[in-house]
Length: 313
Image (cartoon, rainbow, N blue to C red; front, side):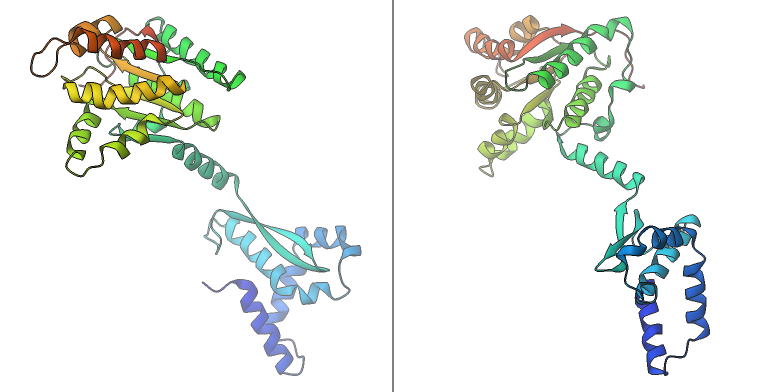
């Protein structure tokens, strides 16, 4: 798309080649410029800064400004979609500066926030979760309150370790949604969060053995400023996943004092006794389960969430 200012420059060149005679088109352009109240006000406000012939020499920029404004008013797409023209003085002439519209700024902010939340095998819409959309009935209020307390603690004292939450309760009560909402609150404060659906991640890690990429994948998870492990305990866990994947991640985070959240259908005691201590082969390994749970308890504080199943179907 040819910029209007380039088109006007061509007309001005033609005018010079034709001995300085104004064409009808150029006359119309100049009339459009002179009839624009914002242009007139700008010239009045900056009269002392402008050259004597600034209007004629800046005609291409002035007409571009008037034309883009007209396109925006008519809801047409300009050559710079999402940006608004502003007149500025540049070397005693009139120029145009383009600034992002409020809608563009809002979209850029949303995209920036989304980049601060990394999701691995999580529902696509989890990045849209917000505290405002969380069901705040009595059965969920304690978990919500503790989540907000965590956000406030991180905001007021970012240099110290603040344990995350271990949110447990029945299927479909909103545990994942709440962690997504908290992740967005953290994103608003420029804090990076990684959210991972652990049963899916465990499958991915087993596949990574063949490509020798286990360590790289673990590094991405374990070093996140805030980590949210979703649905831990949903599937049976092999000793390898428990000790060499989850154990390695949680050991690093405990040593580095990095906040970690968990969601589960199990309480902490249930997770230890009914899930972690019995591996896929049926072996009972209570000491390994207890060691892992020590890390979980260091990194998070247990809170129960109850209520009705809010998921459709």
